[in-house]
Image (cartoon, rainbow, N blue to C red):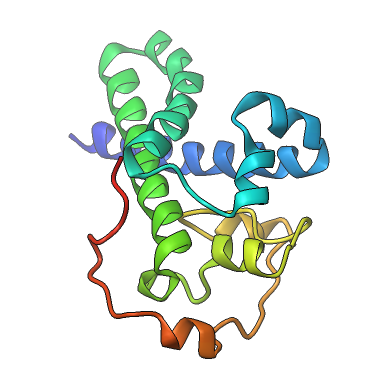
Amino acid sequence: MLLFIICLVLGFIFASFVEYWLHRLMHIFPRFGRDIISHYRHHKENSAQGVLPEFKDYSMAALIGLPAFLISVPVGISFMAGSLVYGIIAAYAHQLQHENPTKCVWLEMPVHYVHHKYNQWDHNFGLAVDWWDKLFGTYKAVDWLTEDELKQPEQGYLQVKWW
């Protein structure tokens, strides 16, 4: 059981690392983002697809964990499960930050929302977590909570586009 939990956590951390670097690479090499998952359009329109279509994209990071099955089937399953857990959390966080960023209470600043609002091409690449931005020096704190955000109608945590 302990091994399952450790591999689950490692899968979660690994998937967040992959997501951070893929997003960062899309900004370093804009053509990469344009060709792979329409990142260019995403920035141009400042919109998200919905939680489930986003999850389809983010769950692809779990495939990078396939070599974990070479250690053992339980290690592979738990590592992939952790990656998929991160994928659904990232998909939800991404959609939430586009629709209602004040609800991202687990982040001191909704990094993806700020990334878009202030056109931060070199900063704040995280979606569900901000620790990689902080670790790699791409976190840029801004005073993001303005009158625009405070004027948004009150919505529940589940009132987002799901598909």
